[in-house]
Image (cartoon, rainbow, N blue to C red; front, side):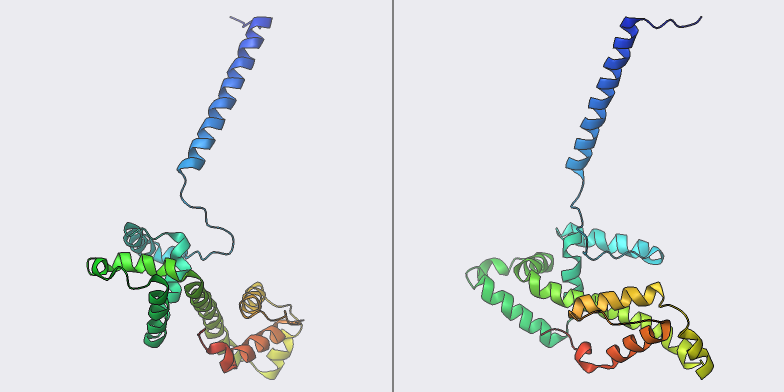
Length: 211
């Protein structure tokens, strides 16, 4: 039987549409309220499909001690330190916290101490973490590229001058300039981009961790 639409049925449709709109708005607000912390642009994200099992499992352990994604760079910085650098950071954190809670410290777990540490000196740990992140990416690029270029002839290198810098080169140069607060260089071709990164990495000043 053919459905006949009347003025009343039009009102019903409008009412249903309005109800659906309210329901969708309610769901969106609920989802936003229940969502975890949002990672702001520029924060470290460790994503590797080959290691996703290890990332999830290790992340679950750290989350159990109330650490979250916002602590990732600080943890990265902490794990990249030498023993002497760690001692200096612990002394710095102790001077901030003071010695009023010595009795309570005896009962604290390492997880609690770790959380307290990353929240006491977040700026210093973030600095170490940014360096560690940059250093990994820089070294990975050089490790992949150096053997390839070492086998090239002079003619091959000249051919690189006719090609624009690769996206990977430009990304690594941008990250390097941002971390070390230096001007972006003129890199007209692929060979120039590689030589800039190579020479930059050879400078011992850029291989030192922040103090």
